[in-house]
Length: 79
Image (cartoon, rainbow, N blue to C red; front, top):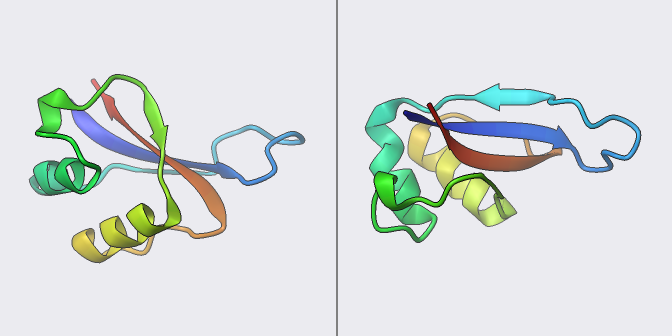
C-alpha cells in the first residue's frame, strides 16, 4: 500500500480526467499522514481526500518536490 496524490482541473465540468499523479517515496508516508492529522498510515481513512493549498505546500516542502498549484489535488491510500 502507498499514498498517491492525484490532480484534476479546478473547473472539471468540461474535463474530469486525471492531469497529475504522483506517488511519494514511502519513507515520507508517516510524516505526510501526520501532517494531515491522522495517527499513522494505517489509520488514514479509505478514499481520496482533497488537499488544502496549505497542505499541498507543506507536503511539497517535506518531500522536496513541487506539487502543481493550478490543480485540485487529492490524496489517498492505494493498494
